[in-house]
Length: 282
Image (cartoon, rainbow, N blue to C red; front, side, top):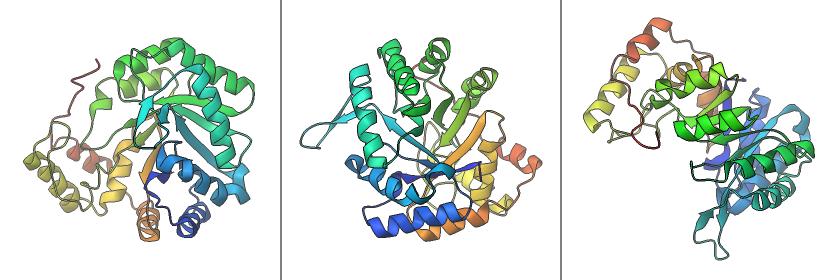
């Protein structure tokens, strides 16, 4: 299931249950797992590392860096410096119980970052064999353009769904042209494309969100499958990461993966609302 990734952030601290869910995902052909050093103060990485250790060479693990917790763990600060990234990578490797990270991403990014310094850190880690590829997690077009110009990044993670089509304005085509793959997050729009109550979302009113909900629920066989297929239809998209917390959610995702939604249906859904666009960070 190359088109589906396991978002580990939602896993709770119940380690035995979480390990079982992760291994069940692998047993059902999910081999892409996304975590970050920020999640649960690094404990999330430990759970992922322990769960996937028996088949480490058969899975891809991505983790993220840039948010540094304070000593009391009450807040974090943004730290994209080379020195911090190099030290944080070693800590992530230890927690993940692995010699290498398949994909290491900057967990955000602004135009005011020391971008070249951050890239130097990633390139050094790659030379050392500690990471195989690197990228950024960002929806900001101006930041993405700079990283395309300056780096050899392989991937950008960005929010993308039927209720967040901002990447369609520019970024998806730009990244595809640059041979840089996209990993989507927020593909189910905080659950509003499945079963969560409608509310204002990224410039859409509650009424507009309800219109999309009704279209997805009434015109498609499976909302999860439809949401996945909508984002995966763009050639730049490699994987849609879905947050999973329980075995029930995992089983629903697995069963949804084999249900097809027609191209005409996807096209009609894209006409329900006018695409939202970037209003900041242009």
